[in-house]
Length: 285
Length: 313
Image (cartoon, rainbow over all chains, first blue to last red; front, top):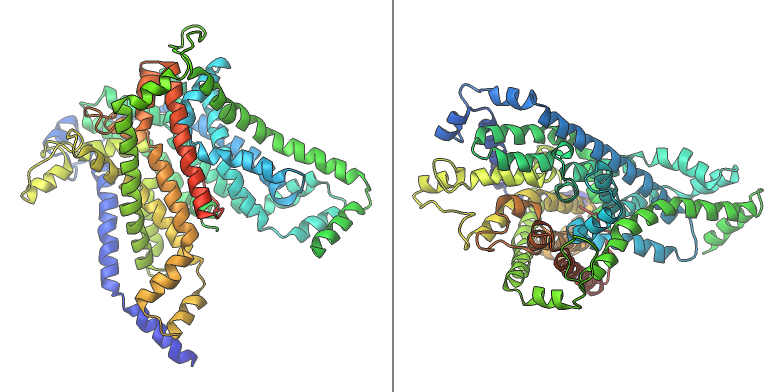
């Protein structure tokens, strides 16, 4: 009986020819990678080379543009600003959201549902929709043109989603542990700090990884809040650089490639965390 | 229920007596306070502040004194360009729902659960999602270059015997071109969600259906897709909300042009609120956008009756 059914399952699975599957997959891979490869090719050309042969293999590769971008302070300044904002926002989001998610997951109080609904209202207000009002408030607080403002705003707008993600992770931790800890005389804080957080490390790192990507790539918040070019973050600086050196396409390609490098490296290391954060938030019905 | 009571019992008589309840209460307040404060100051309060300013004709210099009631809203709603922007937002949302989602769902189902190279393909397909929109926009600006000697896409068109097109300069083509870029960037996210959703469907259910004589098509329509329901809803929600609030990609690629052909609500708001610095008018635009997003969210919640968990992506 089992043998028969397994055979049948295998048969149905074979109904989709493997070859077609791989052809589609490889086709898609090319669609995804070609633009990126062309960018990298371009970054290794001279200005003239870019004009005469914009999308061919650079032969020989020229690294002058890389030297030029990397020896100027502009790029490094933006990189540092981006890192400051990213670290600040990620720390803020992880700190604030894990505290709140702990309460929503492991504690009970009157009006819990109401407070939870209030805080997750943020899901309906993506930053784009609210940036104008946010700008006005930042102005009233005299915080414009500061990285702190960018950090505060990014953190505030990433609270809602990440509380939900973390709550899902915390919910998966058995309640018995909490009871046992309380029996042993732990306070809620002890339990949270010494037992829950270490156990929820995968959840914390997922939220951290997601937040890092969101913060690192955000253009709108710094675009609205930052005026001084010394305080530009990488996305903002990249956009301005493209506007300023738009004629030198090879140089722009180099700048863009370099500004993508940190993201790609980070992605390759943290793919698991990013994916688990996204799916923990979205795939649970 | 019994477990609840038992737990409560143990909590109340754990040796530290009444202290526990007070301590818990303090913990709850202290732990929730940072989230509530930050959220209130930077998300909720600004919205109300904006409602107030939207009732003024105000250029941001000095206090807002020129109260004009709902005039800003009247002007926005009767402005042909804003109407165009809303239509464009809806077009992008519609295309995402009708093209991008089914496509990523189909491919997620097609590639299935386990096969050699699955991880590698996933890494590649998801790569555009982690690149910033600024980078994506600049990459595609180059690819869409109208000159076939410069732009890769036109080079291919010419190679295949077609005429080259000004993808971003042609009002007829620009929105569609932007949609292609959006698909390139976000297709991987949706596929990833669907793949994770598929992973959650227990093997046994599919096997049972096959044993009961279901064919591949029946398996798909009666088992796989219904069981992916919450993932599909989440994906659709993210997709529409993303379409309604898209800014960066369009601003960097076209600034809403040519002649407002790719204008969306956010670029309209940026143009009036920040470039021209009409803060009163810009506030009103923001409130209109907010209401549209809010109405959509409420419809989504009530229509689908299920509280799916959403990630902010």
